[in-house]
Image 1 (tube, rainbow, N blue to C red):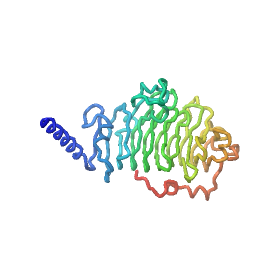
Image 2: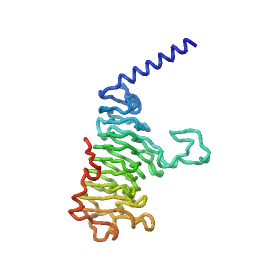
Image 3: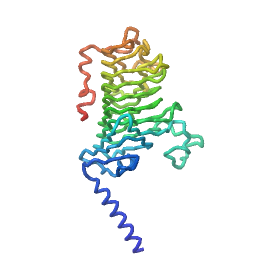
Image 4: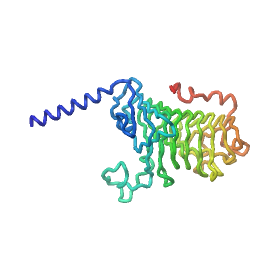
Length: 332
């Protein structure tokens, strides 16, 4: 027994010393080929101290990292920085129709789960960010499952999240902004998908992003809470469509009061004349869909639904990052 206690104490001391050695603002380095201390991004995240009051960078070298990553809520001030946006890739292939028993988060079935239960949309993420004050730069996040149903690449729950020069690749439900009243900022990102591929209740500002539609469907599916003043704002963005995409909606409200605004953006001819869809009967009575000063063949608002608002110059001038993000100024 004495020897066992000595062994346990020794192991705890070793773990404590290891954790303490990373309790500083030094950069952590990750390389899949084993040339750095960490081979996975998850391992680097695990050594970070809870609720850090300093900025910690995890630098990820070029490579393909097949990982299902969670940045937990007890971390903050984390930045994951890729060496090259197109060659530093986080990928996983879960989709909503995978049976529970075969999923990567496998656990014993509970009473309500039937033998044929599927994992559902909200467990399909490749990268899930529960933390606040998180930054992702110069990296690709991909759900590589293909067109097999809902399949999330990025799932966010934290507040004050920044995404700069990233690619988000997927099909249905590529980006899920999953927590009401949280604030997100996307700058110079590429986002692709098929159906509702930017969806959820968060407040998010998209600046200079490229939105790529892969098939005839809907770009956004906001579920903005009734008492949230803003939802999704796309400013100076470019919408492009694949050759097979000939008829695209800017969005539809996943829940009542969904808020989406496209302004100062380039909209292609494939955008439908009516622009938006109400999803369910009477939801157009609460949907908050707006446009301002867009350009391109798809920017003509003369045939938009009567419940879609075209903002005046005075109204548009009030919609700034500072106003939408409630005074939070993202550090890029």
